[in-house]
Amino acid sequence: MIQKELSASNPNTQEYARSSALLKMLGRAFGFGAAGKLERARFKVSYKREQLAEFESLHPNGRPER
Image (tube, rainbow, N blue to C red; front, side, top):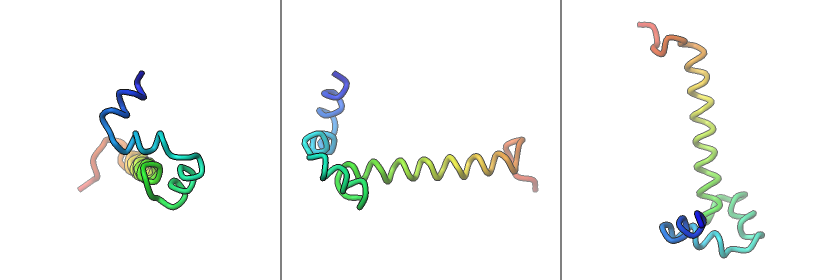
């Protein structure tokens, strides 16, 4: 049910759902198609979480010292 709602709202999701397993795997590896876009977004989120964790460990009160 949720997949149908997502598919209806996003044409890339429809394209991804119809792709073969090989194309999905290649898309993740080389960054093309819906799979590649998703993998790139996951990478960015992961990187930003690491940056935030590092910042929070250096500045426990939430602000850098001036």
